Image (cartoon, rainbow over all chains, first blue to last red; front, side, top):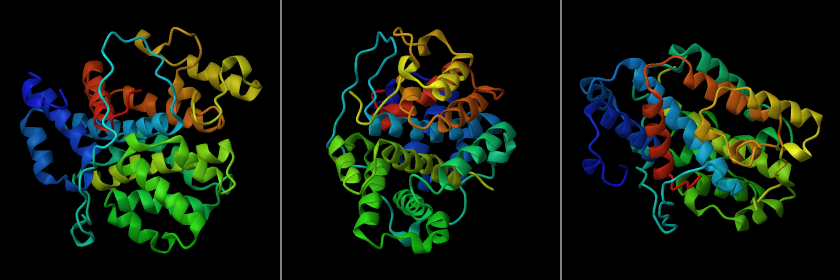
Length: 225
Length: 90
């Protein structure tokens, strides 16, 4: 279905939904008005497009937390375990001058008020606390994720949050791996964070901030404010 | 074994236990209820931060299920495709 969508025998609506999830996950910076028009032409209404975008962005958080913590799969499933290629490279990012400076779609998160409120509460908790991570450390993580996703507006808003120390470089490097190649996350990388003095509670904070921003930057790239 | 400490229901203090109880009241398809009876792993992954757990799950997740034009199978299509593309086996 994902590896060979041409063989999946999906109808036009489901194919369009799959296309949106693929784009939001792999190259949200490349979405544009034509993608919206294509989804509408396939029969998707605005609310379906909006829900698909938000849901995919949200699952980009869950996936990263699961892999960063290495939680064991614990649901019942008759499906075979899919192959995983740790050497797979991420989708190439465009150069800085080609990053989008406006959202791809005219749809807004606020068009789903319940989700918008939940997202604001989540963001406030993750980004506006002073511990275990400092506000500065959170900004470094956010900027690193945003940069990895070509989220120009967030990067520009955090212009002074580029890493300025070895401590911050370790945080930024982890955020970059978590964003671009989450399948390469390892316990060794967490050892590097532990060497900064972070305990398990602090590690979860790093993971949750960087993973949250994977959702937030995707939403910012695609949805209007 | 997970790479950070995970606290399940059995070892939860009253604060975490109360959050787990709240999580368990959410409507959930049977496929998302693990046979071991504890909270699903992705929820337990947040156990060191009980305040974060309801924000991620009872907040965001619940709001995405409510209303909207996508059938459950279509939401699962998005979830599965996203996970496959991220090579997330969970």
